[in-house]
Length: 336
Length: 270
Image (tube, rainbow over all chains, first blue to last red; front, side, top):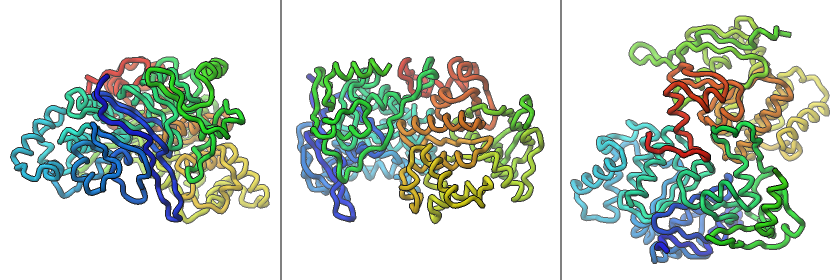
């Protein structure tokens, strides 16, 4: 069994709205990422994917608040730490986060090398400029970015290049966990591929030890990550390896997501897309029973009453449904 | 009725240049296109290939610097605002960003009411109008009673984009230009919106021009695919020809960049 790099136990975080209502956007989420592995998180907009990413950093700022649970990075529990301590000793060094619009974070009046100096100085105040330049140059060249980028201003770079620069900058100290929240969805397919290549390179060269990749594009997730976790209304509804999650999902919601995949491959033209009707529930007052029951084709009256837990089916595969594996497979067979 | 043989819309040598002198860039470099009635075509290209400029010229939002557009066999005339309005009854568009597509000061009722007025239903009794609006909303799975007296910003992105389709339902145009309509919404709502749009197309028999960088979408919806590179169509044909068996190196590269699930995705070629 490989070493656990990131372990999250029953993490719950909430937003407090202007009207003092609690919105639990991440509700008792448990996950484990082993060394050298990557985990993908899929789900619709508004399912709590990005909130989970923010919560995993351990760096909370209003309106997001920590409620309960543990985040353990390589044996160190970071939940409940003060934001300043997290910033000083965790961010950038242990865990790095890339938001969707990361490229907009670059200050247009600063050269790229200044951002890298900033990151390094925050953790190693004694580092000299030459050392940092050398480190940055070797790192950039290894990741396929020309070293000339370092002396450029952000406006001189294209969108895809900026995004890759930000990724390379945020992993300059070799964090153990990289959280990438839709890093490629604002880019066109060619730039997207370059970003994905870079993330793969980071894993292969062991600059980062593990990765969490968030997107709603399942074909992308399938190609990038080892395991896939499907999130719905703040909860995890299915955990499986990439192969099983895409081709043989168990939870009806996961099944629905897979039905909405569009890829340019033979035969896909004749497949009818199956969209899931309705919208995710309002998390201000989530339903008592299964949160997906409202939109589920196979729901029975008990679904709306019984609180469903995760059912394990071996190999670390889990799903959240009151039906058994056989029953679910029977449903899907009938549907075809 | 226009002659069936005659293309609904024809563009000949359509060109757009931006800027002057050394700053001059050729956004669309003389493209020809013919659209038949009820056809669904897709224009695929990377960012900056001139897709949207092309769409805006067809829509009459920007004036081409060269070439001609024929609509129903006649040279398009949009020299005055009145003629433009007449043209827009036949050709409509849905854009990428639903958040910026609405006037934020107008309630949803008035957005839909405008559409009815544009189709010449301004003098209908109020009850009739409400009935039409309810029908349009229920077509896209929205409830008109819930939307009435709301402002567009109170809806989610997916709902706004669906309301856009409801507008098209009321307007009943001959041609619809769908410019990256699904790139800002998630994969699940994308399926819903595509389904609705295709259903609407079958219902009112309109021609649809999809503009996208999503090769999968192009493959799924279209009768004919055009690949655009630097303002020119480099390849065109049926989806099976162009996307499954591409000939041009540019098309091959574009398709190899899309993540696949049944085939190996080759990451070494970047």
